[in-house]
Length: 154
Image (cartoon, rainbow, N blue to C red):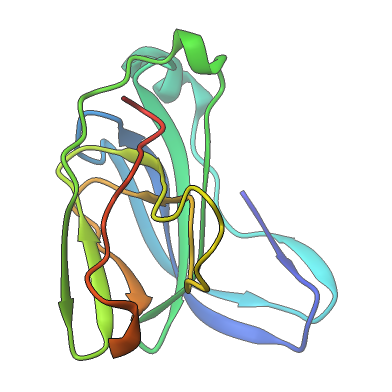
């Protein structure tokens, strides 16, 4: 895995590996990383044979960068086509606390949609929730209760 930094030098925490779409992290690496300014840096690697052994249609590679306890970025990679993936049913729970909307699921929830028409100014739309790892969005009082309208893996 490479970290790409287009800004000033950055340091933080990396969590990466393989996640099971149905829940769990059979490969779960954590480490401190340094990303020099304007570079692409190798920050982690694991044996691709492990992904093949676990099942490429039921697992995805993932990476989460955080700093000071707050998430900075996340990404995931699927190898097969969408139609070949073994999608679990996802049940996303959401609640609002202290100006934050917290989305949680025991399974991978792909591309959560909160606004189909693009009419509302939201902090995010079409985002993933990783199994057991909350996705937290700033949520001002004026937005009301968040409602999940669609999931990509239904």
